[in-house]
Amino acid sequence: MGYRVSAKVDYAVRAAASLAATQLSVPGGATMSRAEDLARDLAIPPRFLVNILSDLRRAGLVASQRGAQGGYLLARGAANVTVGEVVKAVDPELLPEQHSKALSELWNRVSDAVDTILDGVSLADLVLAGGFAAAPSRVPCRKEGIAGEPYL
Image 1 (cartoon, rainbow, N blue to C red):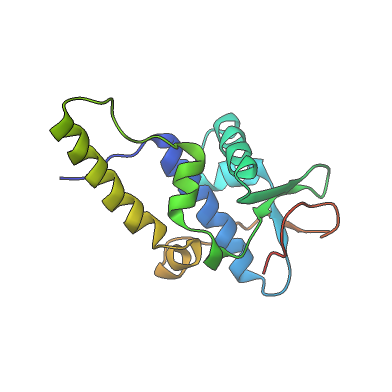
Image 2 (spheres, helix red, strand yellow):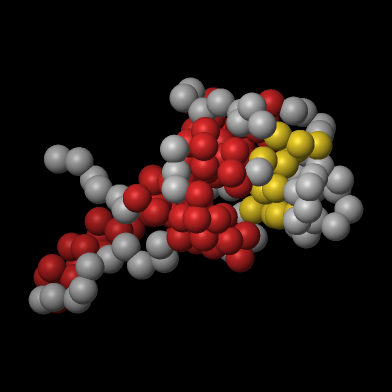
């Protein structure tokens, strides 16, 4: 039995992992990834990705900068952002409608187990496990003007 997630959750985790891979590939230097490059590299519809990146930005997981040298990057170090945070930023309620008390309790236990697993995996863990490469199209980041903590 597999666990199904929405396309939005899948795209968000893949985009965040790509930003993490970019961050981890340039120690000490923050680089920005443009939305159109991420969309192309990850085969995600561009408009859908921009909405996802906006959700991640509102959750404080991603920082952005406008302009020719603009783009997106993780607002915190990849080791300090969990997959669970990314999932909750784009789909805060994964539970189905309430049914009987017994069924509601079961779905709550399933949700708690999934949360525990997702909260135990950082984006850095995901990148280091393999399959995520830094986006080839990236631009150096001017640290001033970008909200958030230091990136590395």
